[in-house]
Amino acid sequence: MSNIDVVIMAAGKGTRMQSSMPKVLHRLGGRALLQHVIDTAQHIQARRVVVITGHGAEQVESMLAAQSGLQSVRQMPQLGTGHAMQQAVPVLDDDGVTLVLSGDVPLIQADTLLALLTLCDHSHLALLTLQTPTPAGYGRILRNPQQQVTGIVEEKDASDEQKKIPEIYSGIMAVPTRLLRAWLARLDNRNAQGEFYLTDVVGFAAADGCEVRAHCITRAWQVEGVNTPVQLAALERTFQLLQAQALMRQGVRLADPARLDVRGELVCGADVEIDVNNVFEGRVSLGEGVHIGPNCVIINAEIGAGTRVLGFTHINGEDKGVRIGKGARIGPFARLRPGADLGDEVHIGNFVEVKNSSLAKGAKANHLAYLGDLSVGERVNYGAGVISANYDGVNKHHTSIEADVHIGSNSVLVSPLTVGAGGTIGAGSVITKDTAPGALTVARGKQISIPGWQRPVKKNK
Image (cartoon, rainbow, N blue to C red; front, side, top):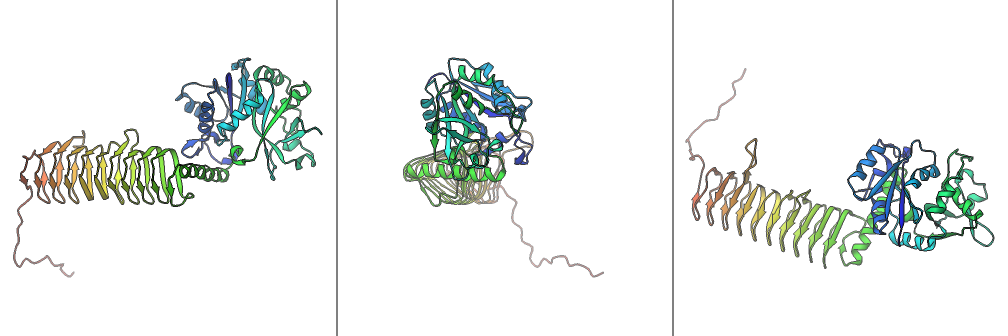
């Protein structure tokens, strides 16, 4: 396809969402409804993407400003879909085809749009329609006895007989821009809503002898819009089931496809297993044979082959990302924060937090510990209750723990320092200075026992 200009309707208020946020910015699968439509437009390699804004224009345009190759035009006031398109045509070129999409219809698929554009063929008006047993609320497709499309009648203008028509207009059309420009100039608002209907161009096309073609689909979820929180929640489940089915076709084993949330990009190798109630956000990569236990949240992370992430683990790479090597074991109840870089066969156990730290092959922190701004060597054992005191109230400082070190339980490593290779830190120590390789270092008060000592007793008042 060439010379395709996409126009996305995104000016509506969305009153029924009961929200101060513009409707098209509400999120589905971790992305704004509008972003889904933009991504699909870019997938079909549109020459230009124009977004019509109106209600909450500043918020919508702020989102658009962060992306290249997008234009916006404002519709103020909002006087109908035809009026909206009248704001967009001045930025369109007559050599192209205008593909009209809706910013609150997020699940339209690229292959469906390509089929519609093929039907348009740069010379016809092509409508995307749907056969449904529940057409209420939508414009009905009018056909003559030869089954040629002659027009669209909106619900509020339809007769009782027309309301029985099961074929509805989806709000999506493809039309040569030079023809659209002329038809838009002929619109009027003599109808039940007093608005300028874009759908009136269908009647103009039929009257002018331009063939109107309909691409009728049966997958209703592709053209379902979002007008209420209930509809948004229902479409979220549809979206997630589509993600689950795609993963299973690739060989991923899901304990329950209905209990999976993918809010970004999830890439899986062979023989990946995912238990229930997991949330994946941003970009997450799972290597071959990875097993994800139940109730985990994983955001912007790369997890190596054969690694097991046990239940209730929270991995959040944010902007820095989290990397986990092969054959590691993480959790349960572990927390990995941005900058955690774990080598092969690393163990991070229950209630262990790792932030901006690297752990080399075979290092272990199995219980109740904090690792912040550390470099941890191979085969280090980081004991229960050990913390790195990396913040002095103003600056963060780094500590290096060299290979084969054993850190005894309940110790504090006061950064900056280096713990020499093969060394041992006695339990309960507060380490403030570098330690020599192979040394045992103990830094705690001498134990004192007082025989026969009596606790204080409360005096009766």
